Length: 541
Image 1 (cartoon, rainbow, N blue to C red):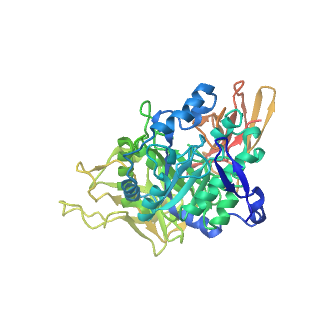
Image 2: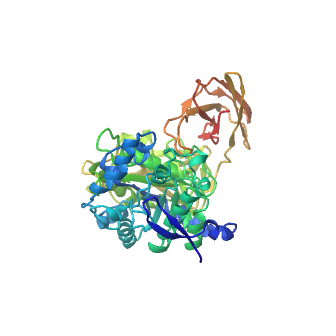
Image 3: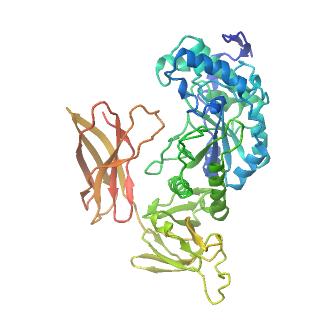
């Protein structure tokens, strides 16, 4: 293939494929359906955000946006001189990830700053030109594959260094800095993606954090089995959608509040919160890509390691409810959340949330009534992790799980018998497995309709349909501020407008007055007697 010469401002030249080289296969390119099904089966991935600016403990890359020329020059001149992660242990990190139940990893090969964490030949702003010198991407990929985990590339097309060197304002998501309007940037990105897809073994996942056109085609052409996540499927950031999304999707979330390492002011999520996020994501049919941020020396902060290990103890017991599962007819009944096996044989009932935080002691029972599940002559029941035959040191106690069908639903009774803590308490969700059950509920459909505006007042519109009357139901709307956020990121939680009583399907409205200068999105909410159902978010006009 004839290439064209691409020269950076630092006079390094590489042979880059022409922009049109991959256009011929663009119409046929895409994620293979079979590979998307493989991706959906994985359930849990490990995101690793790490770059040279971990030394500063500031937000990864984004400190360059709005920075002075002096700051930018010092960033690009000085940080490579001191980046020497001599405590990086790829094998140990990969073993921990495997033990914790992760099935794939995605590594920030290049974040927005432009620093390449592999030995690229395209430019010197890379790990090759640091005191460390060794190819970190290669080390991590080898270690994780040795543990049986699939490997993935995070790649930012928005190269802040290229923008700075070419006299452009450092920023994102505006046309004048996009690769599609900057041929030199696109050519650099294409050359780097070609290196990654050709020289680093099988890449199972690619996450484009920016404009993917002209780059995802390279990934699919050079490695047809790769799954492009961001850039081809839904990848909500720092939030879990309120309802299942069609097909494969992936929520990416931080284990704390920051993506990269921050030595102070970091607020870590509790293990209970992380499990709730994982369970709700899987109940809605998505994967969870959970992020860690390594320290400048390559070590994993203890707070993050501790959470990964506790997550791993839960996954060791309950991973059947996470791997190769799909949504049930409803996501949850209150604090009971559902996943089901792909063949529909097993239904997993995950006792999560407020009820389960009350320390379910070993040797005690709980009873639930499931409204959306009906037993069949072949139904069986057990609690994941235990044999339902004995409680240690209590020979007179029978822990066998039972069920019986009544007119008001499927009644189940389960005892937590397995000893998991010295204290006999287990503060995390437990999972009931039911086999060969049937659906007993046809859930309504909830839609958020396009709002209308008159002056300072916005009329919110929504509907619920495809359901029978439901006395006691209530309908309303949630809203949240999205001002200044990335298109995928949602940092602010939902705020709730008052719900209005309604027992019948139909269309409903509410008045809302947004604050001046703020941007919002809204969603419809149906508080059905059995569960709460949300419509898709819609931006306010």
